[in-house]
Image 1 (cartoon, rainbow, N blue to C red):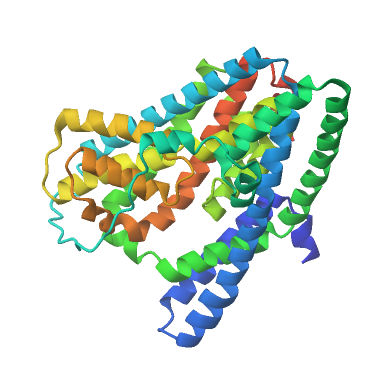
Image 2 (tube, rainbow, N blue to C red):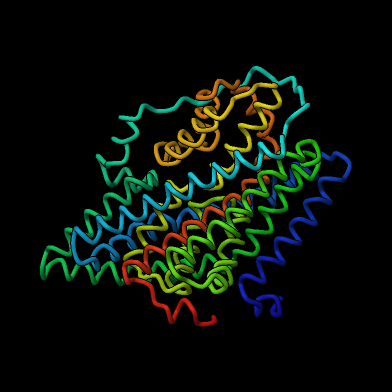
Length: 418
């Protein structure tokens, strides 16, 4: 055990994942047993995984709130912040649009779902989309304490930015409050270090429970859909993001992926962009050299509204469902999918089960039956792990590019080996 703890965190997590997958597959192939299901899969493993996720989520609100206040205090003024926000949102929209376009193109070329002629259940009840006006209103907090308590990330971001700006304008009194938050930031980072010490054990429980429940059986049934989604996710990760780093940031690709790999692995195992915020923030600031004033805004915002992985799933799923029903949606239908999925990635931020909700909206826009979602729900849990890793990589790419453009990226930190 001592030898295991001497390994780096990323190596510990890899080992935990491999052992978890192995145990999960063994449990999945054992004869049906009430004892194993209740006391092992849904007992020890499920409990351990949920405790770990709860501890991670415990960190999210204080880290985002305190880090963003500290970062906003360091910005020189409203113009700088407006420029930072505009660049970030524009780049997030572009990457999401590219992701959904790639997904549609690959799924169309592979003709996935053709010949399925599936008989789908009709008892699927989609969640309704909130009106656009209400979605915009929900961004602004009426009660900041309530927003903090409920973990409403967009409202927390807005309040923290306003509060940080007020501190920077408050003179001597603001300076004292600023120092208090800087000290709080140090304490919270230490709290994060404590929680991360148990990360390998939490990852083991999460992965083992997933594979014990699902195994690989569903992948065989939906091989075309599964492979198409993975293919586009890797295209986004290995072609689109490096291109953005090179063309827009003039940044080397190898240091980025080398330093981001542990954070991406962590996001893969948790399947939660929000729960991964503490680890991603720490990586972007400490290892990639993005200043806190940029990272503390770009990363939490990306975890809330930047959904490249979800957009990819929606594009592939749309073609898969259309072919399964033998419905031709045409070029105009594809354009509607691109527009709807891109706007929905921002417009539905913070809504529970956002991926399925936005997919419902996309299907309705092109006249496809929403019951088709039932086809992919089962296997989607496994794909969600890879989607999350791609999402956090995309957020970090934008943080580096925006940081470089604002003179808020330390090239020495970015290029130096760990």
